[in-house]
Length: 366
Image (cartoon, rainbow, N blue to C red; front, side):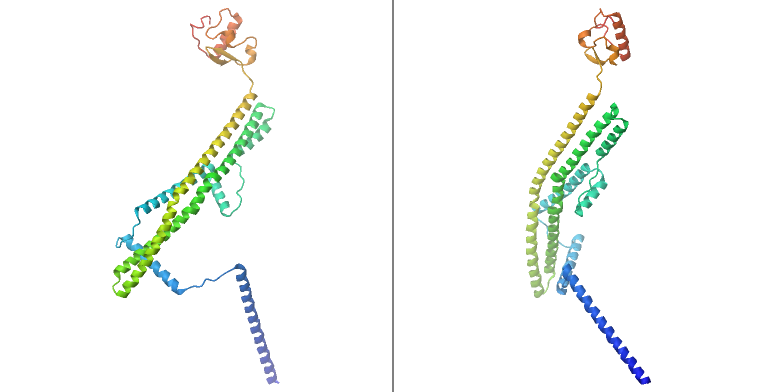
């Protein structure tokens, strides 16, 4: 009875083990199938590492570091570029530096708030539309219009605030148009030049410098080679390095020569920016002149007194409503001696209020 029970238990344990093994194998196959599907959907290709190429690249990197260190210490010679190439390289560096400053300064003028500039830059990088924000002129316009409504549209001050607020809104819209147009015709082309052509030139110059280090390292190995076999291998490497250096030098020089063409296009962009700026200031001037005319119509006219070829305000119209105060009634240089005594007295009081000094030879009666 005991033997049967132990046999039954051993069979049950064996069956459980087989079931666990089958389940584990099934789960393993399931995971492999899942990973294969994910790799196929995401187009993931695992890199094939080549140990030989890796070792060769590591050796080249070490030789470049050694060559650069020896050049810094002055213990070895280096291949110098020709004078024309050096001038082109210096010109490229100067062009890059000043173009970056011009773009940065122009954006500072167009958008004075640095936080808004950073925000716009982030939205450009994530390829989303920029948020539409109100300018300072538009905030001022809204406050003036609202204040004019509260003060009363029928009152002179309220009417003037509403008129000025509407003009400020027009100025704000002109400013938005100017910023957008300037970005399209000037800053964006210059930034595209920096991100495209100048980055390509910098990359090719870096490759050229690497080829130069390899060439100088090969020259040093040829000088240090002693055996015939080692010297032949070093000379073969030198010929290959020289050919690669010459080819890369030609490519880089062609790119550097293209900067003159780029500067010609930059000149056209600069002219377009100036035209945009002229049009913007003309629009602003027209808006302000129109506002000035509207405000002048809202003011009540005051009578004026012409004395010694100068116009003087006569105060409220009621004070001189009975008499005319222009040059036809008073004369250009002297007052009439046959004036009415009451008019003479009121005129004298008026002149004392304005503190006007007269020429005694011209106005003897006063």
